[in-house]
Amino acid sequence: MNLNLTLLAQIVVFFILAWFTMKFVWPPVVKALDERAKKVADGLAAAERGKQDLELATKRSADALRAGKEKSAEVLGQAEKRAAQIIEEAKAEARVEADRVIASAKVEIEQESLRAKEGLRDQVAALAVAGAEKILRREIDAKAHAQLLSAIQQDL
Image (tube, rainbow, N blue to C red; front, side):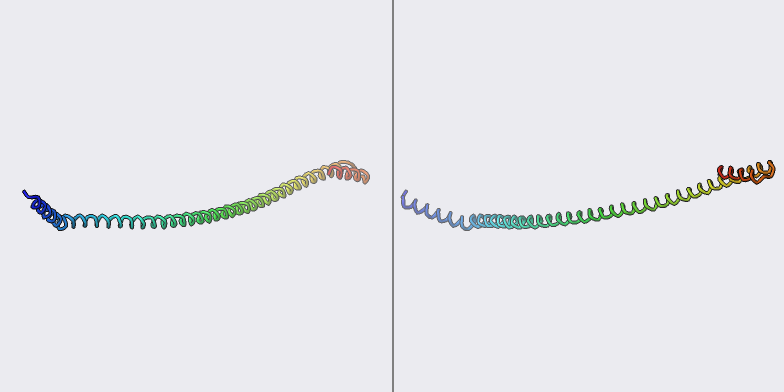
């Protein structure tokens, strides 16, 4: 065996192997690497879009939270106004009811006063009749009449 022939055979086999690798093995490997690089690039782009979407969502949620707080403050203000209005209505109704009770009490007092006056008139009439009866039982005397009338006045 000749060393040159072995070296030449190894060179030929090397070139055939290099050609075979470049023709059949290398394109699928390069294609797989390109696809992998594309997937990585797409993943990075998606991550960047996700980051932007997250920032946008954060801003929107902050805006929604602020709007919700403003709306709740507005509703709370309206509720406080309504509560004050209900209190004022209740006060007005209480005043009306108090006025009605006072008017009713005044009418009742007036009726009691009229009953008392009527009772006094009945008593005065009874006293007058009693006085007249006493006068008629005695003899007719001006001095006695005057004394009886003054006594009746004192009773009234």
